[in-house]
Amino acid sequence: MKIIHPLVVAVIIIITLAVSSAIGVGIPLRVTQTNVSNSELSVVGEGKIDVTPDIAYVDVGVTVNKASTPKDAQNQLTKVNNDIVTALKKFDVAKADIKTTNFSVNPNYDYSSSGGGSTIVGYNGNATLTVKIKKVDAIGDIIDAATTAGATDIYNTRFSVDAPEKYREQARTKAIKNAQDQAKKIAQELGIKLGKVTNIVESSAGSSPVVFAEKAMYAGGMGGGGGVADLQPGNQTVSSVVTLYFEKK
Image 1 (tube, rainbow, N blue to C red):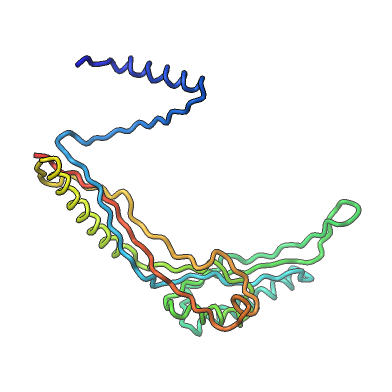
Image 2 (cartoon, helix red, strand yellow):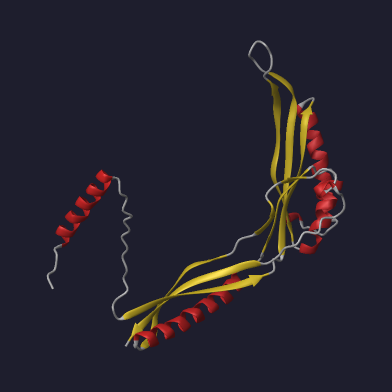
C-alpha cells in the first residue's frame, strides 16, 4: 500500500476547503486525537440514580414603589424584611440558612417634563432573602408565612439534593457495570479476549436542581386563590458517564 506523505494530505485538505468555499458548500471538519493503542478497547458506560430532593430554596422579598424619601423606602423595606426573618424562625429555619441577596433603594425619575430633563418623583426599593429549607414538606407553609409577614415577591423556588456526592458514587457504580457488560458483548461479537482495566475516566457526573418556578409575584395567594400551595419536589436524576479502557489479549 502506497503511503501518502502528511504534507500532501494537508495540501489536499486546503485545496478542498478552498474549492468548497468558492462553490458555497460547507464541509464540517473535526480533528480528534486519541491515545488509545491498538492493544486497548475503550467502552463508555452510563449510570443514573433517581433521588427525591431533600432540601428546597426560595427567594422571598418585598418591593416598595414611590416612597417619599430614601429613608422612608428603607424603613418600609427594613420592617417587612425583619418581619419575614421572624416568621422564618418559627419554622426552625437557621440563621445560617437565610441570606440577604439584595437590599437596595433607587430614585424613581419622571422624564415627561417639557424641558427634556428628569425629576425625582419618589424612591423605589427592594429587599430579597434567599432561604434554604431543610424540611421540604414545610415549603408551602413557609411561603404562606412570608407573605403574611408582608412579602410581595416570591420567586426562584427550587428543589435540590443536599449531598449529591453519595448518589454520584452509586451512579458511577452503575456506569462501570454498564460499561463492563457492554465490553463483554463487544468482545464476544469481535471474537477477542479482554484483560484487565488499564484506565477509567469519568467524563461527566452531575445533577440539576428541580425548578418549580423561575419567577412569580405573590399577591393575595398563589394563583389568586389564597391558602397554602402544595409544592411537590418530584425526582432529581444524578448521573455518571465513565469510559473504561480494557487490555486486549
